[in-house]
Amino acid sequence: MSERDHDHDMTYLAIRPECGHAIAASVDSPECRDDVAEEVASYVRRGFIVTRVTAQEAREADWCECPRKPAPPKAHQMALLDA
Image 1 (cartoon, rainbow, N blue to C red):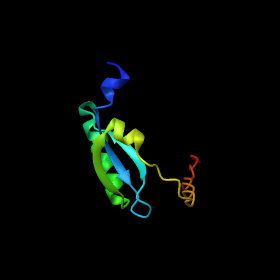
Image 2 (image 1 turned 180 degrees about the vertical axis):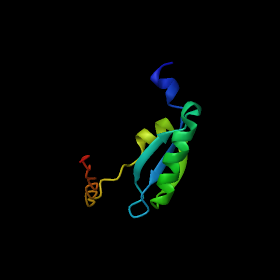
Image 3 (image 1 turned 60 degrees about the horizontal axis):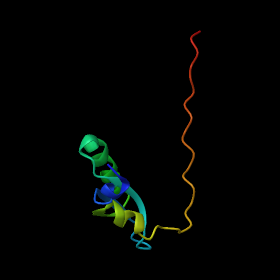
Image 4 (image 1 turned 30 degrees about the vertical axis):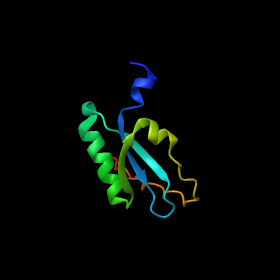
């Protein structure tokens, strides 16, 4: 299958409401249905607007370039040694 054939694959596009630009995308793939559903649910939980477009439309979307705070570092867990 050529890249041109993939232009018509459907993609879930997450849009930041603050600026109206795309911030994330997930290809709607039957093989990865659970992963795609989880990813789209995370977009919704984070307050993004989700729309379903072709892969070509996702590539041509205006992508967000807004400055954002970096994500906080993940908490480190201490390992307890056996005494």
